[in-house]
Length: 159
Image (cartoon, rainbow, N blue to C red; front, side, top):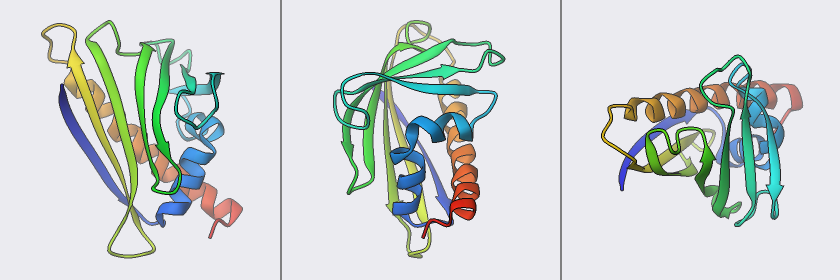
């Protein structure tokens, strides 16, 4: 397995980022990325718990994929951490044999800030030069979600 990392410091404490991004995942994921995703569906098992399966549905205008289905392998709401593995759709079977996403919201030196931290582990299906796709996707998701957290926090007054 190979891996890559993406981190972004944001102007919100970890509990606020986690509450808006993950605890409200079904609404926040698509709302933060209009034109990319249009909804998240919980398919089986408990939502936001290990073993739960969810599908992120791409917007029709996106064009590359119809959906990406994941399983929550691990999730710890107190430590602000999850691991999910792509099990169907998206980049799977086109370029990658396996893709897992590790996400943490880490405290920053400044208690009013946090770090959105991703580690992506992947195994190539065949030789290709498409790794930048994962890097770009996670960069964009992180920036869009950071912006959404700011907007949502301002509107709803999360402390």
